[in-house]
Every structure is written in C-alpha cells, then in structure tokens.
Length: 509
Image: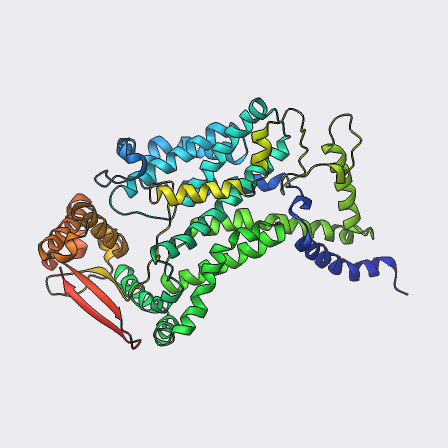
C-alpha cells in the first residue's frame, strides 16, 4: 500500500511545476508581494557594481560632457581614492544595501558614480558601461523624494513594503527604458534601415576581432572567424541571427507583466549579452547585473521551490500552496483600511509589486490622471535619454546604431612598421579607447572638415599619440624598447562590397 507520505513525494515536484506555471498567467496586480530579502539583494548588487567601477578617476575636461560643462569635477579626482573615498564609500554602500539613511546613501553613491564617469567621459573617450547603474540610482533617489512628499502633496500614505515595492518597480522600468532607447537609437541613426543593414554586421565583427587581437594579443576562437566569413556571404542568415536582439530590446517592456515574464525576459537577454560578448569581445556588466538582480531574481525562485519542498523534509503532506493561500489571507487582512470590512477583491489594486489600497478621499485630480498612465517612469526615462543623449548619466546608447558598408579601427605600429601587440599592456589604453579619442577630438575641433583634409587628419593623429604617450605617462619604456620609436598611427578599413566580398585596406595617418 502507498501511504500519504509516498504520495506526497510523488506529488510535490508536480506541485512545484504547477506553482511556477501558475505565475505565468497571473495578472500584474495579483503577483506575489516582495519578500524582505529581495530589496537587500538588489541594492547590494547595485552598490557592489558601483564600487567596482568607480576606482579610476583619471581624466581631464578638455571635451566636457554633461555636468562637466558647469562644474570641474576633475578637482575631486586629484586625491587618491583609497586614502580618502574608499572607507566612506564602503560605509555608505553598506548603509544603502541595508536601507539605512537611505536618501543620503543613495545620493552619495549617485554623486560619486556621476563624478567619476563625467571626468572619464570628458576626456574624449565615452564609455557606455556605467550609465544604467547611475540611472537606477537616479530613479531610486527621485522615487524616495517623491514618496516622502506624497503624503503632503496628494494626501496619500503607503506602508514600508509598498514603498519598497514601488522603488523596485520603478527601477525595473528604468532597465526596460534603456533597452527601448537602444532599439530606438538604432532606427533613428540608420534612418529606419537598421534591420536591412544587419548584413554588414559580419564585416564589423571581423574588424572588432582583429582590433581585439592587437589590443590584448589574444586571438578569437576559430569558430568566430569561420562564422563571420560564412555570414558575410549570407545576408539572410545575418538577419536571422542578429535581428532578434533588436526586437527583444524594443519589446522588452512586455516582460514587465509579472515575475515569470520578467524571469523569461531577463534570462533571454542575459544569454543574448553573453553571445554578443563571445562574438564581439564586449562587456555588458551593468546590463547583466541589472537583469540578474531586478529581473531574473534568482533568490526568489529558490525560495519558492524551498517552501514547496519544506513539507517533504518535515514529513507533512499538507500542500505548500495551501500554506501560501493562508499567508495571502493574512496579507489580505493587513492591507484593509482600519475599520473596513472590504474583501481582497474589493480593494483597488494599483501596482504589480504589492497590494495597494487607495483612499480616494482627498486625492487630487492630477494624482488620478497620473495614476492612469502606464509605465510612467519608463516613458520619462526614454525621453530623458533621447533628449540628453551622451551626457552622463543619460545616454542614447548609439553603439552600432548606423551599420554601413565601411568599418575600421586604429592601430599602432613601430618604426619597423610592425604592429604593437598587445597595445593595452604597454599603454594601458585599448585600441577602442584610442579610436574613440581620435574621432571625438577630430569631430569637436574640426566638425567634418577633417574627413577631407589630410593635414587635419594628421593633426588629430598627433594629438592622439600625445595623449597616449605624454599626457598619460603609463608607458613602460624598459619593457617596450626605446628603439621602437617613432610610433605611427594606422587606420585599418573593412569594406563590404555589393557582391558580399569583404575588402581590407590600411592607411598610415
């Protein structure tokens, strides 16, 4: 005879699958409320990322962006980070993670990441890896201010859990907004032809992988080279391989529906970022951090499985779903207004992250209008990034926005015309950084005139060499060799011809 315990062991895996499957069909307002450890883990991931990516504050203000037009932040970067900033930064990172002095700690983290990246990006090399973390902190700070002022302005009060849930919800909208901006920038910069121009991406992959070889001395995997050469002759296959990423970015807000859709969207884009990193040797650390913390939310799913397995470990045959329903019943009592006999179904549900009771008495007309606008924060952040463009913390993420028939990069050669490999080891500059500085300096100083002037192009090349060797004295002459001077700058071009042939050329600047 099969007893109840044995039946439970067979039924439990089915219950877990059913519980997870059930969440796919939940409406946003019926989603499971946030658990106490989720905000701590999310804030901890964000604080750790900010700490790891604000340790280099070197730069100048000769090509100011953002707040550098008004404030010279380079003065704050003159003192050593370890002696002055680190202890305080670590202290306030812990404060932020555990929700203590929340408004102050959020502001200080936002201030420091803005200072460091404004200085770095004002040196002529704009890096797009930290904007998302800064945007999340910006929305978090503004959200806290709003929730503090909300009772006075709109006569509206919320519990601590509801406020925390709203802040997480707004952060998730911010992440979704950056992906939508990426997709919109691609279409804006390519005049709506980005999907058609995906046939040129294999040529760009060839240029990127050759540039990476000269930068760090490491060759790409053979499968990458074979794949790029194959795709250069197959425009339809290039479209099939690269276009899904565009649609994932554009339609990413649909994954905000509930926890399960966020899990699917987060994991899908996480895999996509790793594939692009493998093919192009690019990093997407801030995006992967945000997807892991705010969308995949692995601790929650581990906890969900754990509470469903708990009856098996304790020998109880009571269904964990029944216990979950009991907890939801207790939550229903907690969210009722004082003295109210309303049931859960009668409560007006406002947001997905928790059950929110709205007291319509005293709420203003403006508040009721704003409440009807879906994804307000996401819409505001899209406008914010598209209008301000590359002015930290905003960014319109223009990378690979306009795919053309020509691509290329800059490289260094020595007096014997031999490529300098690895460039990063000798100069602490990647060739991508060097190229960004070259084009930023030329564009700022001469607009488009340098494209038709050999003299202006040479002047830009000399300025780039000066920046690398003299202004940033990181060159190890003993290791590099004095006899390898003078150095020269070379532009490598890749052309994608109409017959799908890829042509490579070099030109000394």
